[in-house]
Length: 232
Picture (cartoon, rainbow, N blue to C red):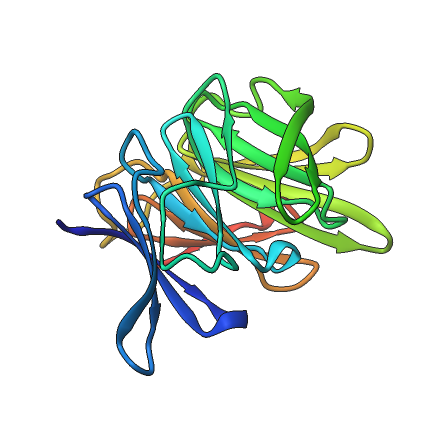
């Protein structure tokens, strides 16, 4: 079946692929051979794959409302048992790990952001929701970006509601600013789709590059709409 998602695992120099056959395969790109396969770990289609340096031996796969955790260090060539399956009330649309490596941060398709406390001993993993930000957005949370500045932890959430929101993360998440790209206007030569926010990249402490669904890239300075502009 078709390959639905591809992820490069830099630390291990391996390629992970997810297929429409509801399987995940791990490839050695030097030999061009599969070195590990995960079968029968998923009930629904696989939406995305994630790998975090804080959990180097684990691969996270989102599938509907579930996060399936796969053990890359397992000695089995064909593994049919995930390390853990975490269930949420809504379909998962984005995933990140907190900067202190203690929390899994999950965006869902209804605009809520969930913060889950992770407990892991190597052989098992569990997560318990400690708080959530309801109505963080009015549509799908498409991307979560975390960074540290002057000893403080921040998060940028992006959404198909055409906005990015800047949060300070302490015991809970506090909204600092929001930019609505639908209000920035369009330029000649763009597509006709709305400016859904698909991805966000931190350039430096002032600049964020934002990929939009109307075919443009926007530069957001300090999350001030008056300082934002759009690139062809």
